[in-house]
Amino acid sequence: MPDRSMPQFPEPDTSPFWESVKNEQLSYQQCNVCNTVVFYPRYACSSCGSGELVWKDSKGEGEIYTYSVVRQNRNPAFADLGAYVLAYVDLDEGFRMMTNVVGIKNPLTDIKIGQRVKVKFEKQESGEFPVPVFELI
Ligand SMILES: [Zn+2]
Image 1 (tube, rainbow, N blue to C red):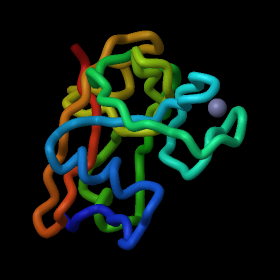
Image 2: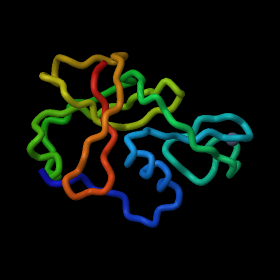
Image 3: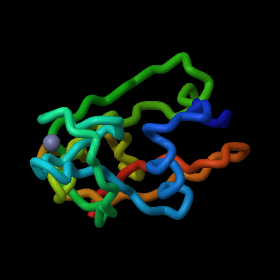
């Protein structure tokens, strides 16, 4: 299976996220001024505009906010997967991320909103960075 698309570096706003992913750690940002949890990684707080964002480690657990089952995808990295789950996951630390939920026998019947999930890191054959995906707990 071809690797998924990878970020092009230098990429100053997301590099710390990808460096932590290399160590199988999911990270997010929090504002030092107003405490807003910020995700996806960015230069300034999405609430108050401050540049004082700090990086924190997530436990990598949360629940499915919503999802869709993709039955066909022409991208070579996804073409052989068959039906797969694209989901928004609400992490326990208070951020939401778009991801895949993997390891499900029948994505059409075996997944529900609110199910608990945990991050796992999908290694890419040639890519330096694994991709964070989720599996049911
Ligand atoms: Zn802020």
